[in-house]
Amino acid sequence: MDDVNLQGKDFLKLLDFSREEILHLLDLATDFKLKKKNGVPHEELKGKNVALIFEKTSTRTRCAFEVAAHDLGMGTTYLDPQGSQIGKKESIADTARVLAGMYDGIEYRGFGQDIVETLAEYSKVPVWNGLTNEFHPTQMLADLLTIQERFGYLKDIRLCYLGDARYNMGNSLMVACAKMGMHFTACTNKKYFPDGKLVVQCEEIAKESGASLAFTEDVAEGTHGADVIYTDVWVSMGEPDAVWEERIRDLTPYRVTREIMDNAGEKAIFLHCLPSFHDLNTSIGREIKGKYGLNEMEVTDEVFESERSLVFEEAENRMHTIKAVMYATLKQQ
Ligand code: CP
Ligand code: NVA
Image (cartoon, rainbow, N blue to C red):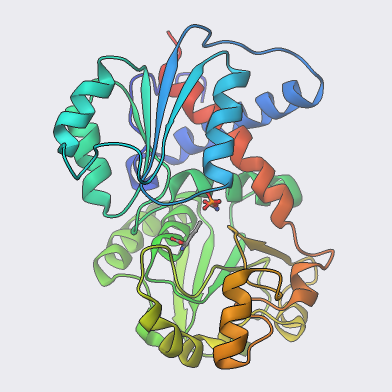
């Protein structure tokens, strides 16, 4: 584990990393978390600067990158969804070469995975994926850390994902489970099962790691005995409003309820990448209530607020794990 060296490497998707490298990043994050809690300064990357490109909005990912960078002694520049030339007046390839001349690392949140891959191809400094339509790898590290903290291990953990499993969260959790030897179940309407090609890739990885993958439309079967019940919003950023009606119809049977948590393992926890529609305290939540009469969507407020819900610990872990990624890829050996 000690000879893991990620210096200069991009962090674009978990598929590019070995189990040992992922465990190394989790160890680093644990170490940084302890330092932060004990007030031990760790400005290990003093003098460096990072650019944070957000073509979609964010609370956790942006704040995690900013706080982590500042704790490590680095400067940050936030480029918001409107405030730069990216994609409109300047290509990704040109943007990569401009920013790499000024910064030591570049975070990108946006649309297709091909965009962040192109950015990395043209950048001579590390590029970190802060969410694309296909993958959300920094979220995976926070989720794995949260699971490891609670259960003490990852191998053989049974994780059941309910909802839209074809998008960034479902895809990424399937990859994370395959890599770490965990048991992944996508429990949802079959229209929302993960991408077939990615399933084949993950099945290959699972043969090595001892992981398993399952896909079911049956809620009682899919959630039975699970250690982790996971869900995400039914409509992701960048998707048209027109899909709401169909999503509500297809995915309401997969809302995380108390019955689901009771059917899961005795020590089961609830995770969600957030933000979440679990009450009417958001403008979109109220709009959906007005149109479709729903008080809560992918998870009930009861489960979200219950002791089994570790969503805020998970959100905090975004910062510690993102710090580990920046440190591992930017530090001098
Ligand atoms: N979970 C997550 O990525 O949250 P943000 O969209 O707030 O960054
Ligand atoms: N699937 C969600 C995840 C948000 C963190 C989205 O892409 O909007």
